[in-house]
Length: 266
Image (cartoon, rainbow, N blue to C red; front, side, top):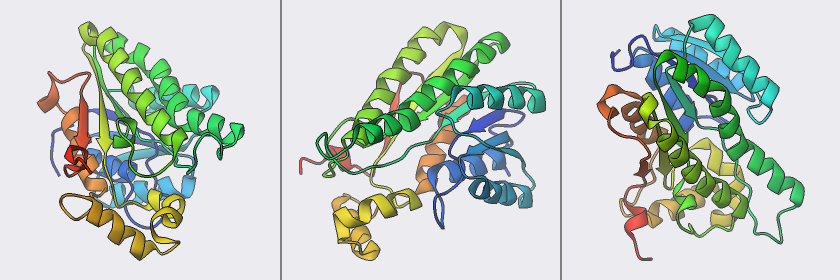
């Protein structure tokens, strides 16, 4: 156990995992707890976030959980109120929630467009809307929003809703960073590249491997300069750095965690 986040209170959204293994939010919640943070772990699936809490508890960490739809204002406000009631403050807001739907403007329905916008982008607006006043009142805080390299370049998959929301996160985060810089509140984005996490399996296995998950992983590994995808812990360690005092002079940054893939011409 470390102490880089000792006595800090962290909210982690999307802290469960949609399948077996480690998702970005799950790994981040566990790593924050290992470094001394008191974690409020949120997910739309209570069972998923209960697993995260169980891991943290077995390791001697502190974690409480809530089932929250972060696209709904009333649920986000209630979550923030509960965090303050339980822990008395909010030092770190880690926005990790996101969904992937394949398709371009013609293929994607209006309902799907609205749903992805709500889950991926509106959720971050809502959490920041209700958390920022408390960070300002207490004299500071850290916000980290998970974007994607899909927000800055085409990744070979036509998922217009995902790419649009991930680009929106970058502008949203920089706006917060500059508005609140003088108030000791930092805001940064993390842009994961091709990652081997449970979230990608169902949406992308048909695109890459004709439904064959092993083939999908082989193709995605070969696309990476390192010849292997990253994993949830790569994102979690970047998040730990940004949440810690080691990054005290970093705000408005876009931290790319992609094994060099955005440096490639093809």
